[in-house]
Length: 326
Length: 255
View 1 (tube, rainbow over the protein chains, first blue to last red):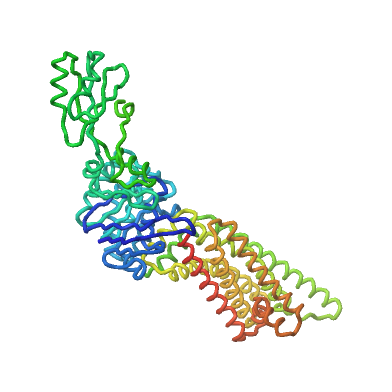
View 2 (tube, rainbow over the protein chains, first blue to last red):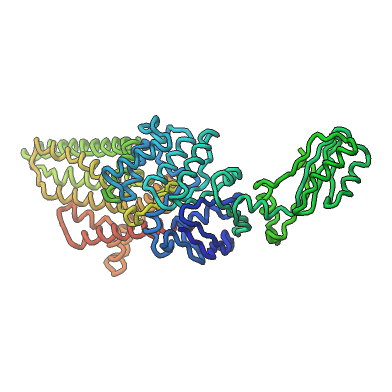
């Protein structure tokens, strides 16, 4: 549905996007992750035909963004960073204007407006001026606008910003329901959001794609070592060295005086069984033993922190005992 | 409803929800009304003088009232119309709705024309209200309607030109005050071209410079002369301004 090939965008000397390529299949939800200024919004602006790319091609539903912008625009629903609302209009007036701009009229327009007002819970505010609405409602009006003409492709720039937790869950549900019939690209810096609603994640940093995969595989692929957190009731002085001697354990960090240890182990080797047995036979008093899996946050931080000169494969997950054990 | 009509409807709605149209309309009608009243009073005073000297007085309201009024209205429009146009694009850019508008399946020419038409309709409404003045004077006096109608044609064309300059200025910036100042500036320069032209005299350059100013074209219409040359001036400059606005809006996407 969306195909981006080798897109580069330069502003004078500054390169905002550097040969970015990715694609989104029909019905797929793709998350765009990246720190501020990574090029998320620029990519979205190119896809929505707001600005042309310096090099490369972007195609939406088979139409080229540079050559057939009208066809592309007709098939896209776009929610920019700031909800594009007119404060002096009421919600219904605004949606009617948006619908007319996109060629809806008569009963189709009325029923589409009704559908979105219901779907986004705007019923109570539909006759109020948008200028008097809270940030959360404006964001929902912005979403209603993007969905109004039931587009095949949805491009949402940080769709849950400014919403309260309950609304965030509602909007995520909404996006999940849209998957299958719509292709969705959403940018976010809230990582659980990407895990919650997306089949695929693209991590972009400094204008380049540094990783692209499912949220689970991304964490798996970047896990260079397994980590185990261990809490003991009565560790002895030789505990650390004996743990270190267990086959497969590469490194042991202590977490202060609380009897916690962080074990770094060889990849693909589960030493939990052996460690547990040692603890029990030595009488150290086992309180807790668990494997630490890398969250998407860790992956994201690793990838974007090591962007200078390091390919994703070369990223080594460094141990951070204090952080991990906290 | 076509996209252009949708834009016109939306812009008219925005104009009449905000206090700008009411404030501008109030000031415009107040000043035009006061000036009209003063010119009539002066004309009356002159009539009394003539009566005392000659015994009779044949007053020409066309010369004494309407020509003056049309000349003054020109200046009022120059100040007031940029206030109406300044928000058209500048506000969209400031409030980030510009991106939404340009990612809608609507051509830039439709956006520019829609916005121009909306403010033009507001202007025609305000101008229409000043028509009450000649109608009221017609109850009490006799005058020639023809130069008044051509004068109004002149005001409509002049207003359209001023508004198109305003649309262009508004597209250039996201600051409304700057947009208003830029359009007033461009219009004043066009005004001064008339003086510069006459300073240069009857040379080719002088004539060209005078032609660029709207003064002489408007004066012809106020005097009752409908010349194709003047109509061509107004229409071509209007089209040029809207075309330039199109280019500016288009290039604003790149930043």
